[in-house]
Length: 239
Image 1 (spheres, one colour):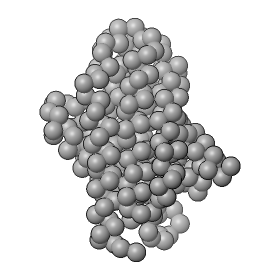
Image 2 (spheres, helix red, strand yellow; image 1 turned 120 degrees about the vertical axis):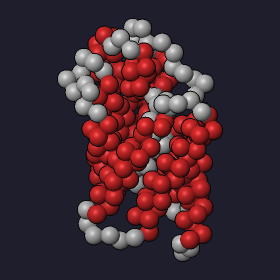
Image 3 (cartoon, rainbow, N blue to C red; image 1 turned 120 degrees about the horizontal axis):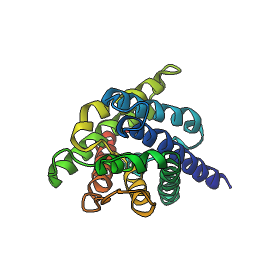
Image 4 (cartoon, helix red, strand yellow; image 1 turned 90 degrees about the vertical axis):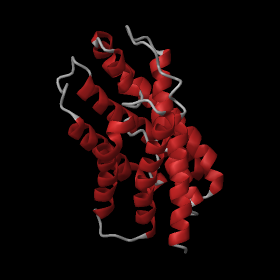
């Protein structure tokens, strides 16, 4: 029963994270949105604050991973039990699908009236500004590595109350500012794969392709980056 509560927390947390984060993308990129064109700073702060919201609610229960790459990083870094990994993965991927589906329902009218196919897809999934599979992969790996080192550091320290939330915000928002222009800063296989599936399955007028040829990059890049951060952190800061 205790494990089920953890999995339920990751499922709900990931779904809510997608509703908040993907709605930020919709707000800034869909032309009929009242916040259209508000730009990258709003996107960075919106995603950062969304992650802080999830961390405050679900951190005490599940650690608020809401990201398979984060789960891998903690597991490889020996701060998370391996037997929970499959259940966390299932909860995260299914939660991301439900969250993406809710976003489709909320923004259906705006999506249908959006003339640009890329903006429609951008609500749900990431993509490179310049397509170069190797560099795109490295961008996602390095971006996830950077965030994962912050999260691993917080897990081993006892900072003053409230300080962890600042660094969660800084890690996510700063990452969007640093890497978002390269690949959209997915850093989360569930965040990209399952909403991309929602885009592919759900009716959206004139939606175009879901760009499945690129989908492996935001899946494997974050996993590799998270794992490498776990390995390096364990070497540098052994228990």
